[in-house]
Image 1 (tube, rainbow, N blue to C red):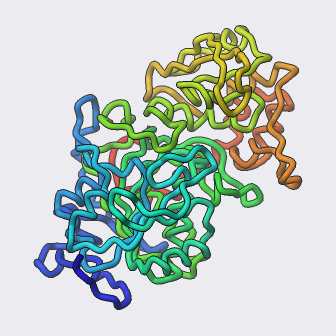
Image 2 (cartoon, rainbow, N blue to C red; image 1 turned 60 degrees about the horizontal axis):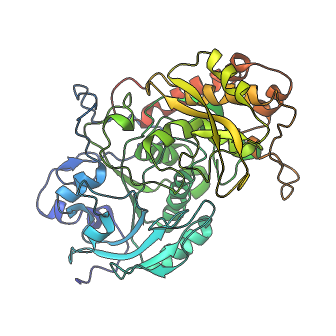
Image 3 (cartoon, rainbow, N blue to C red; image 1 turned 135 degrees about the vertical axis):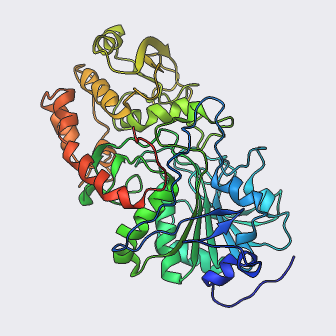
Length: 455
């Protein structure tokens, strides 16, 4: 393997042979002939380089991920720097090969470490678990366990690996409580403090660009919501990285990170993954399909209750129920006429997690119109109707006596829980955060990269 420079990373070394060959570079890194756009400074104007004439992705539409764009150029923009790769089973190319496997075939590249998030680099661990530090058997590369690592620990891991440039390629699902975006954030802070470069190989948001749900409040931040964003953020990981870089890093890291985003091509934010995704490697063990991602943005709320969220079934987050429920719950939900979804009376016996080997009554959600479906208000309606059962309880975590209700960490504050407990209906609960949604939507505009209606 070719030995590369050992000096501090610079934009010139990251661009490597792209600059050496005289390739044009506009506002960022050129990989595979496509221009990536760097995050703007907090007070600068944004030139998004958006092709407003790009067609919306649809059935048979061609969407090229940032990884595919970079690979098409032989990863030329990653030469001349020591690479640390954040990825998991979703970091694949169109032929289903993992990007790390492909990168490792290029002798002109130097990968010094792979960093695994929750569930691990190869994805074998269940929720709340990881694969530990190991050596990847396919590539022989060292794999560092980054799950649960704070910013200080991540900086130690980056220093130990000798990385100069961190590369992030993980499929997000568009919800604040999905932990990969906080791995992204914490690793960006650590990289900024060390003066490293950061490259995001962007992927579409599978649930589109709609913004919804309550804002996280500072007193309820955690690993499922570390900073103040709304529940359904409506951004790709590349757009989120830009938002983090402009809004949060200067205060937390003392500076922004040297960020490059390799844009997705052919995607519009009014599309859903069901319309364009030929491959869906599960981002986590309980996210088996793109349909799961669509409902998860709302039904993850049921982790904060004594209802099963469907873990231990073949349709997690779509099958919701409990031993004490009955067919009336589904009937009442169906009578609400919620857009884009039907509720089928369902019975299931979980094989792990809540109610192992107990028969649960409830519903299976069937999304009939992915664009009309509203995951957050739908989940609120499900909670409102479930709360009418005397046996319903909010999950209580005794290890955190100051903030004992898990639902408050998921929803961002006690507001939703206390409103539902007091008898508020869906419109009142959802209406309580509409101003927060509008303010967040306005705040994020300068960091967006893709044109099209965000709905």
